Length: 467
Image 1 (cartoon, rainbow, N blue to C red):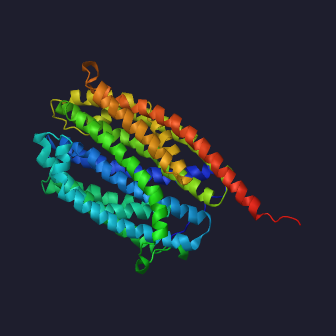
Image 2 (image 1 turned 135 degrees about the vertical axis):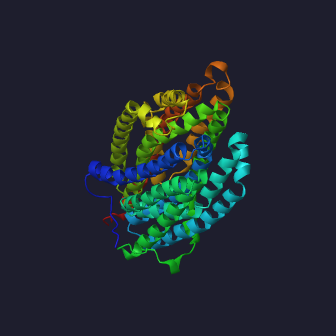
Image 3 (image 1 turned 180 degrees about the horizontal axis):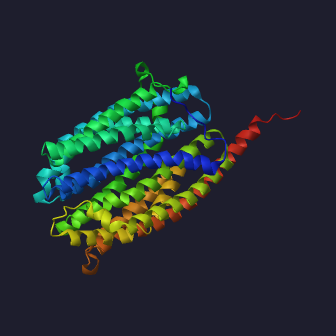
C-alpha cells in the first residue's frame, strides 16, 4: 500500500530537499537511459549517421513529452490543492478525471504523431540524408506516447499526494530493462535507430502498467484509483484545463522555439549537429536536476495554499530558489570539468572526426553549463505561480521572453556571419532567462500578496463577532 504525505507541516528546507531528490534522481535516470540510447546507437550500431538522426528528432520528441507533462501538471495542482484542503470528494474525482484524460489524450496524440511523423520532420528541415532514419526512429517512439501519457499523469498524482519516491522505483526498474533491450536489439539483432526506439517503447508500457497498479493500491482510500470510476467530471476538468492549457501552450511554444533552434542547427555542418546531440545529452543532466524544483515547489505551494498556509508558501519559494541555484552551479561545474571524456563516450573511438566533434560539444557546454542554474530559477518561479493557481502569467511571460526574444535572435542575429556559429546559436538562451526571471519574480510577488489578502479575508469571515 502506497502512503500519501502532507507537505503542510515540518521543516521546509529538509522536507523540500527530501521531496525533490527522488524527483531529481527520477529525471536523471531518464536522461541516463536516453544517453544510453545514444551511446549504444552511436558506438555499436556501425551507422555513422544514426546518432545525428536520433538527435534531429530531439526537439520534436521534447515538444510531445513537454505537452504531456504540462497537462499532467494541471491535474497535479488541483489534486494537491484538494489534498492540502482535505477536500476528499474533489480529490477522488480529480484523480479519476486526470487518469481518464491521460488515456484519451495519449491515444489521440499518439495517432497524430505516428501518422504525420515524416511531415513534421520535413517541416523542421531535417537533412535528406537523415530523413529515413529519423522518420523510422520517431514513428516507433510515437507508439509509446499513450503509455508515456499514463505514466506522466500517474506520477503527477503521486507527487500531488506527497509521494515522490514511487516513480523513481518504477523508472529505475524499467530503465534497466530499457538498457538491456538496447544492447540486445543493436548488438545481437543488428538493429540501429529502430532498436533503441523499440526498447524505449517497451519500457514505457511497463512503466505505465506499474503506475496504474500502484495508484490502485494507495493507502488513502480517497486517493485510490478505481478503474470502474474512470470518468470526466466536467467541473474539475475545467479547473484542470485552467492550469493545464496555459502551461501546455507555454511549454509547446517553448518547444517550438527549440524546434526553430534545431532547424537553424540543421543548416550547420553534420559534425556540429552530432556535437549538439552530445551536448544536449550532457546538459540535460543539469536541466533535469534543476527542473525537478519546478514540480516540487509547485506541489509544496499548492498543498500549502490549499491549507491556507500562505506564509509557508513564501518560505518554500525562497528556500527553493537557494537550493536550485546551488544544485545548478555544482552539477554544471562537475559536468564541465568532465566534459571531454563524457563527450567521447558518444563517439566511435575510430571516428576520424572525433576530436572536432568533442571540441564542438565543449563549445556548447562552456556557454550553457556555467549559467544553467538560471533556467532552474525561471522554471521554479513558473511552477510556484501555477501552484497558486495562476498559469496565465507564466505563460504570457514565457511567450514574450523565451519564444519572442529567442525567435528574434534566430531570425535577425543568428544569420549574421559573425554569429552564425554554435556559440551564436546558444547565446539566445541566457538572454531569455534573464528577462523571464525578472518578470516572473515581480509577477510572483504581486500574486502572493493577492493570495495573502484573500486568505486573510476568509479567516476574518470565520471569526464570530460579538453582539
